[in-house]
Length: 455
Image (cartoon, rainbow, N blue to C red; front, side, top):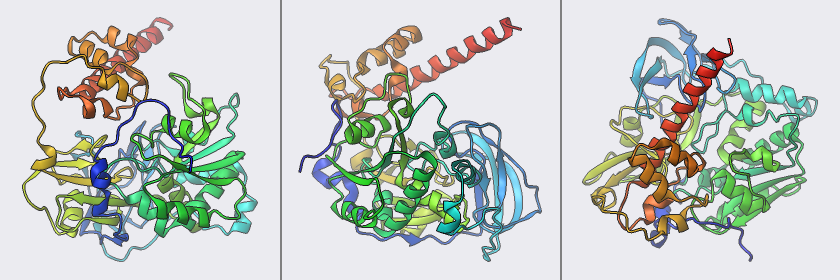
C-alpha cells in the first residue's frame, strides 16, 4: 500500500512504545458519572469568550444556553447537567487564567431543556445549508481535536473562495491519546452521519477521512460505515507526527499546500475533526448541543480509560474515576505530551477541547537542563513548516520581536517537534510561543493606533 504523508519534517515520538497508545486503545468508552456539581467555563473556544446569561438560584436543564458568545468567532455554552445555578465566579481555567465559570448543582435527573430540534433525514433533506449552519452555531460546536475553533465559522466560506474538499481528521497523531480512535470504532456511523451533514452544508466534491496506519481497525470501521455514501473516501496515512495538523493533513490527503499565512479554504479545503463530525450529528439528528465529549485519561493512573465526560467535570474527578494517581507523579497535562498544556492544579475543569488528561511520572517528565545550541540543524530538519526554529528562538531570547517575525515565527504551529529532537534540550517551542504572543500584541497595538488616527 502506498501510504500518504506530508512532505517536510515531522517526528515519530514514542514510536518504540507504539506512541503510548497501548494503555487505552483497547479500552471501550465508559460513562463518567457527573459529580455533585459541574463548573462550566465561559471560555471554551478559540476567539471571543461568552458572557453568563443565568443567575444564581436559576434552574437549568441539559442543553440549555448558559453562556452567549461575545463575537462571531465564538460559540455558545450549554448546561451539561440539570439543576440549580449556585454560583457564577472566576476559577482556574485549563489555559492557566482565572476566568468566569457557571457552577451548577447537579440534581441527578438530567432533564433536557435544549432549544434544538431532532430532525429525521427526510427533514434534513429539506434544510438549506444556512439552516444547517445555524444549528451548528446554536449547538456550540467547536473543534473537538483540541484547537476549539468554532465550527460554524469554518463552514462560513467567503464568496470569493471555492471549497471542493472536506478533509476529516482521524489521525490522532498525539502520543497516548485514543479518544478519536475509540470514537471511530464505536460510533463510526455517527461520524459518517456528521460528514453527510457537513457535505450538505459545503457541497464538496469529496470528503476524505485521514487515518494513520497505526489504526487498522478504525480504518476498517470507517470504510464499512462510509460504504454507499457518495464522495466519502478513507485515506490511509503513514504514522508520523504532526500528521493531524491541518496543513499537513491537507497535503497528505489531497497533495495541496496551504500558502504561507493563509487558511485551508485558500487551498479549497475545510478540515474537521471526527469528534466534531459526531457532535454535528448529535445536534442535527438528536437535538443535543455539545455538552459532553470522549476524553482519554492515561499515563500514571491506576486504570487508564477512555471516558465520556460532561463538560465542567473536574480533572480530579476524572482521575479518581480511573483509580487515582499511580507512582511518582511529576506532571499533569491537558491534551497530549507534544502540544498539551501543563496544569498547576487538578481542580481545573474539562472543556470542549479536552481530548486527553495525561499524567506523567518521573521517567517521562524529568527534563534535563538546557545547554548551548549546537547549530546541528535537527530542529530545521524536523520542522513541518520549513522554518528555522533555532533562529526564531534566538531572537525571542534577545526580545527582538521584529527579527523573530522576519523568520516567520507566526507560521509556527507549535507542534513541539523542534524541542523533541533538540540534543541540547533547548526550550525552543516555548521561546517561539513567547515571540508569537509579543508579535500579536505589537500588531494589535499598531492596528489600534491606526484606527485612532483614522478618526
